Image (cartoon, rainbow, N blue to C red):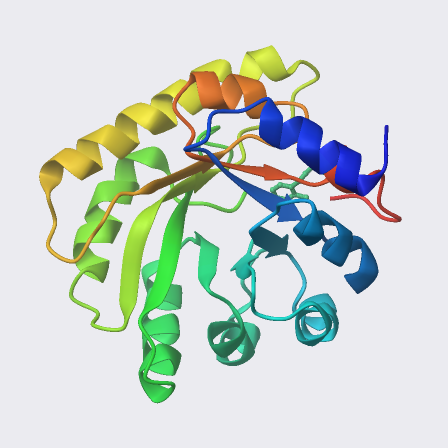
Length: 222
Ligand SMILES: *Cc1c(COP(=O)(O)O)cnc(C)c1O
């Protein structure tokens, strides 16, 4: 691995221009994030509110901040004003809470719906067959704007094995885009991480979330 700046340049030069790279910075410091931004990163992902509250004021708002962790209901109040996009919406109940806090801040909160593409009962995310109905229901909420889908896929030893899950999520994305639900703009399909982003892009990702390959190893597991 090179420096953070070298990693950023090598990743950005190796992917199509229309694919957004979200640098997932959990476990990394503000100076590390700043190095990535100076090398061309425009979106930063944070998984933990406490960490985000430290680094966001230090790095500033010249970049977009995405919440990429599991949203705990008691943290919604603080997540909504701090972030530009929440990638992990996974229930109607949560949507109602996000909408309520966004209204208080006079904000339209962009979200992605997290899809449990592996259909694993213990995992977060909405089961694929429930996604369209959830989005139709959310569209009535005035302060939340659904802008696409996000998926992790199962943890597998070989990233190539994720391809069918990415493909199925892309099919679902196209189906929902084809439904033309008012107020719903299917513009982001967020899938692929350090080991799998190339495969995800081949399968139609418009946004990839990369941590380790940009910043190096973290002090704790994902
Ligand atoms: C940590 C994390 C990533 C980045 O993972 P790497 O394997 O380090 O690239 C991407 N997406 C989510 C939701 C994460 O929590």
